[in-house]
Amino acid sequence: MYDSISNYIIEWRISKGKMSFDDYDDVDYLIRGTMQGSLTLIFILLATFFLHCWIYAIVISICLNILRKFTGGYHAPTLELCTFFSIGFISILSFIAKYTQNLSWILFYISLLMGLYLIRLVPNIDIEDKEHEDIYYRNQYIKWFLFFIFSSLVSLLIPNQITQMISASISLSIFAVFLTMKNLYKFNLKNREGVTE
Image (cartoon, rainbow, N blue to C red):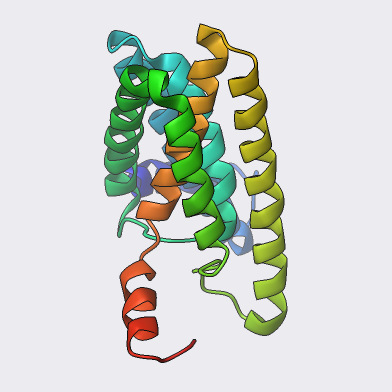
């Protein structure tokens, strides 16, 4: 779906002389990414609106998008599947956050442990200059992880319904990042065998 729409728009712009064929790949990536991100957000908000947990969905979406940028992890083979999985995954997380916000302190400690453990795994991403870029991605993850953990802690220290919602959403976001690290099992298996990466 995304490819067909993108191709139609690009071919129309080329035929009108508004862009050259040399820019095809860059424009195609921009169009498909924009469509996928917009549709995903719209359907997430619609789904969570009917589930009465759209505020959780907004916080979780923000945290997940920022952290996953630096951790890498599982990616669906197509944009269509990515949209479908993202809508379902974030909607479920938001629904869980709604009914576990009274356990915010427990969620906080669990997410803290998971987030710290993730430092050993980050990044799980394909990059050219791996030796140099590993340091950058890991440092960026640590910076944002500390920011979100601090925000969650501050929210817990200001006890009201809104702050509990925020804290529970942040905690479940970190938990979600942990679950989507595709080399998690491989890493644990290697360490049990006494092999280091």
